[in-house]
Image 1: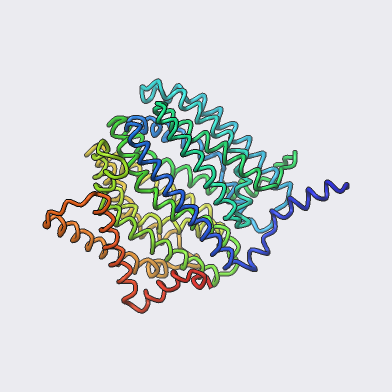
Image 2: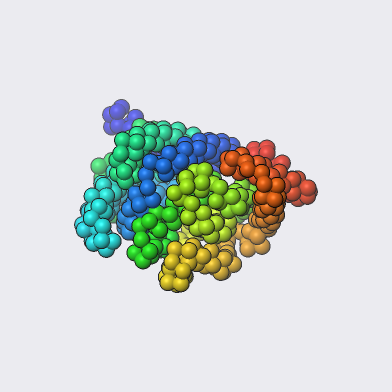
Length: 507
């Protein structure tokens, strides 16, 4: 064995070790959370600015066309990962041959998906009776193929909890992509702006991941090496498939039975609502997945980490959604402009479900990190059947508004059953879950009532504040009420102080 081979093995081996993570789990979780949250905040600011600009340079139909394609092709692209990245993160011990085999399997899967989407493109255009969807779909296919070369590099970096580097990659790719998108929209590219943006982002991210993660796959592939990963990932992929199916059937129903303009309004309202939520939830989930996976054999530490993570998510997400729902009309006007005013009601209806969805989704993380992927798939299937049925009834009764209402009705109807099913025989009980979210839930609703009173009071005074000033003042009213309630009671005050001094929260 020559020196160069030894160096390569040493270089690759460092990406497989995780003992150092357990030794400093608290520090890595805090640093990773701070880095990722900072990146998400900056991403949110830049993405919001982009949304403000593109909403004025493009029209609802442009966004509707992209939603038509993504709602259909998304079913197929669920298989691009097969849950293999989560399997790589969750497995305690890895070898070069295993990861290399998984890498090449991912590349082959993405190639097959890309070819499948390309073959589906005429059918998609025919289904919607829209010829412009054909070339859009072909670009989507190429995009998926490129993604296959970076999935495992990203998984190895998350497994190592190298969130600072991942955050820099995200910020760089997003910044360049946004500038390119605004330039294309200004030059009159229309809906092609949105199509090419996705392609540019994928290329930039792939190059950056290969540069930052110096692990390189061996030119070998063995079925025995990938079997355990495929078995684990099958449950995750099954859930992702049925979940995507249920979460995108609303777009398909609206696009097919109401039209592209209505779909543009609906999809943009949903995207705008989820933007701040995903900027909060995704970084927390990114930190929690490897951390909880490393604690899967330590029930006490596992429960302690999860409940603290759940409280942090509830603490920030619940009042955020309440604020967005209360000031929906004004925010739509500020961010999107007057041509999107009809999206205000849809935004509020979708916010009802979004109030509880982020915290409920964390129970799926318990199933993944404890290896209960079969149960994970089953609950996804049950949710999908109920959600799609609700969308079908909703669009039949009241068009696009009925779909938004159905979304909330199904989410709350399944809340307790989903909790019980996901937490059964897990380190966390239903009572412990509800206890962690009770204070944020109650205080967020009270702050919402105070903000509604603020709107009513300002209306009676006939004060014509600019929309931005009106919303900003309303935010401070809601935040003051929420934080004040948190500080007023000893139990919530202790957790509030722990969040302020975040390093003590994960002790």
